[in-house]
Structures are given as C-alpha cells and as structure tokens.
Image (cartoon, rainbow over all chains, first blue to last red; front, side, top):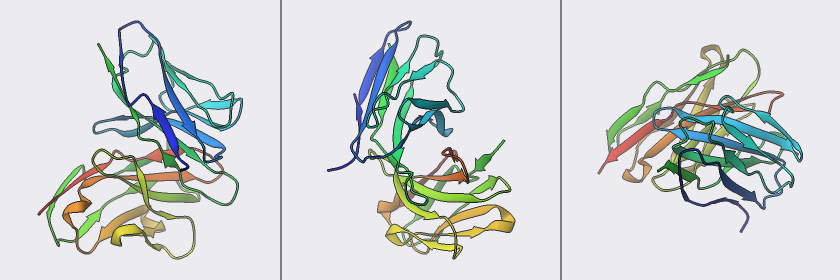
Length: 114
Length: 113
C-alpha cells in the first residue's frame, strides 16, 4: 500500500543530544513537509521541500535541520539547539504535478526529553 | 502575516445535534482551503477541500463547508453529528503560487452518545 512511514513512533532523547526522525513515502510525491504539533497550537511548519536537494525553512526552523537527498526520504534532525523539543512531529507529502493536490500525512513521531 | 483562526477550541455536542466549526483566514489573494480531521490515535485525513467553483463543498462522512470570500471564511458543517465524529478538526489554507500550508490551531469535538 502507498503511504508515508514515520519512524520511530516514540522517541526519547537526553538533553544535549541530536536525534533524527525518519520520514519515507512511496507515493512518488514531489513535495514533503515537517510539522510540529503541540496542544492548542495546531500544526506549525518546520521545513518543507519541493524537490530533491532543495528545502526551505518554515515558521519554526530554529534548532532543526533537514536533508532531501532522495525523492522518497525527508529526515528531520532535532538538534541540541532546540530548547523545547518535546512534541508530536508530523511528516506530510504532496503531489505537485496536476492542479492542486492535498497533503497526505504520516502517523507521527512523539519525541520526549528524558 | 498570513494566519488561520479557528475560534472554537473545544466543542461538546450530543448525538444528532448540528455542528458548525468556524474558520477564518487572513490573505487577500487566491487561496485553496482544506479541512482535515484527526481521529484519536490516527493520522490526519483530508475531510474536504475547496479550490474553485461552487463555494459549497461536500466532503466525506456527511461534512460540508462553505467558502464565503467576502468574509474570508470556510466554516465546516454537519447537520447531525455521531459519536464517531469525536476528533480534532483542523482548517488549513494554501495561498496560490506557494507550497506552504498554514494550519489553524484546531478544534476538539466531543460527541456524547
């Protein structure tokens, strides 16, 4: 089945450590996105990528980094510079070829600080 | 800056009651509008979308939304809710010429059986 796979589902990090969240899609979508979801704040955009080897900062990019070396993969690294990393992280993708297509979402990764 | 406002943060209804969730956005140009739903323990799913044409859009599970351009609104409605509609609902806007989506803060709906 086609879809977006985020792993792991739960992740624990010690203070001062970097951690990488995986996002893989087999939908042949061009654009991929990372959001952070906090209670009462909805989804806030961290980074997005329209094509391979290109990505743009979203509204809350500080303390995060991404790469887009392959079309199907868009990993997110939460660095030690992110002061409040505990949150639910959602990856999404979208086909940009014909007209306006909606985003499809993964199941998310919940990151907690030990 | 562009923004999306969802005025109702928590809504509690009894089964068979009618539902209307508000969504307003701030952008004067062409927009694409979406409502997503997140059921407990599940990923976000598209409920309905508006790109152009008829401003009354019908989605899955009996939901509909009306785009009123003059009011910058895209309210979600359902005539009769069910217990299974308990979820969090997000309104989202994409402005033309960009790949960026802006989401509202969400509305948690609880339907009492």
